Image (tube, rainbow over all chains, first blue to last red; front, side):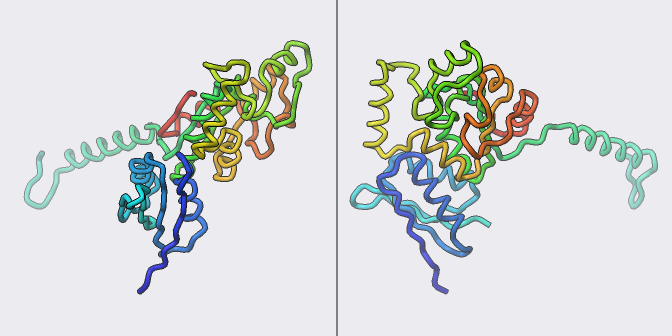
Length: 78
Length: 190
């Protein structure tokens, strides 16, 4: 089964921009979708895991890309 | 406890039942907290309204229930842009002149410099792509944050429902504000 990945490009946005963009995209998308969040806000390193815990969604992975930006993979919680 | 192989004596059972009932009664009196943020927005200054609106929008984006109760100077932040002098008498009118309405007109608590401070702050915010309080208020409404004006301060300052932004909740009093705070896991006064 292939998984649909929706990319939320929040590069350039500051707190709480990336989380708001992500939450809006989650709300508008169907179940079973994986979300890829791209961000440049260094605060997102702590904020995305906190958001996942608060909102009950699952953070599948986080990485820093070569250009210094951040990439997160999120799956909607049950 | 007097428990024999396969039967419990009646006295022990009665005692246990009473203890369960007492625990249940105590539990029902306990205050039930919701996964909710309630902010009492007392300050109308830019450096207060800003964190207020950032926290409220972040809470809503995190799946928390969120409400903001605007009272005293905080109320001027939710005056409709373009609404100038409000109030019935000269005192109320003077208050509105001293506190121009809307979050966009909010002053800083430090470094106001006759408006240069807030202008610099907003310029920096633009450079760093930080949403400004008036934008965050619109976003908060979009995300379902309840924005609630304080009835008493509205009366005191002569602010009418039509002077305030559209889409606000019905004005409430202190007791309802307390109820909001009591059930919120995160109650704040900013």
